[in-house]
Image (cartoon, rainbow, N blue to C red; front, side, top):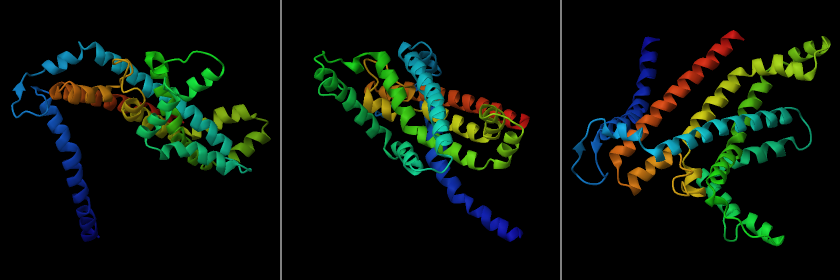
Length: 289
């Protein structure tokens, strides 16, 4: 038995090596670079201590990107979970069209976020955009949708929410199908209504699914990159940037690799803090239930 366990443990070595090579080492290098002034290409690097980190907190564009990141992360999480749970409840019973609804809800996930952004760009584009063509058919002047920062941020939020709502649907559907029907039958015998059953039976027993869906979507939203790049490219100016796109902008366009690394470390620590607090909160809820 011990020999078998030892052999099984050896199987983890390749995985640990890959994690070390592609996760731990790059992360350690990012920490190192964050203490230097470096353009990302030259051989010489100037050590400047924590100046990059101090500059982060004084950068107005960073705080704009951070605010947008919170909107994308929290807003997408709320919308995705509401839509996902609603659709899961809708398709949890057998009827004609059940599979079709599941398919069209999940289908956007199979499209790259980058491609989805480009698709929606042609709806919102000023020249020959779908929305402006509709407006023109009524004799109205076209609108430059993406020049408005609020519309740009809202468009990114809605596209991201719509694309990944199917992921929540799958998680909630699996949770709903694991709830024994006997609980609902007993509640019905006692005269409990559907709304009360949903509140006191469905929600408590779905807590593990809610925990998984919320944390996964929140982390994904806080790391949002591809939709922003393809839909608005962070514009106008830096008005719709996420922190991830701003890191890319500082590294490649501004050639401030050290500063970009400092921003990346900051947002990593923020996501780690949020996910840790979120997991602790939902773990406590599951225990209480």
